[in-house]
Length: 119
Image 1: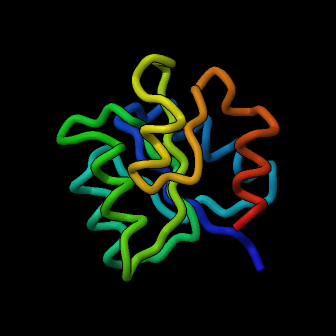
Image 2: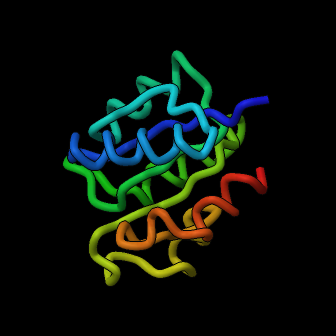
């Protein structure tokens, strides 16, 4: 079964990069959003296995979105990302229900791949 991923980031170039990387790894990026509001709209129509979520979004934070997505009944696994390694910590991400926090500079690392495999 293919793992599907919702990509949430306000930077279209990052979403393209993430989409290409995830596809190359065998995952299926099935939807994208540029804000918390758009992400919630996508989730209402398509249930992904994971959400790759930027911490800084124009209408809220990835931490807020993580709390919503990881809460019942959705229980979607969330991986938070940020270009600012100071934006959050692994502890804050976990407290917000995320499976992990991965700095964008480490996006292609084994960490992200292992988190997605351990669904």
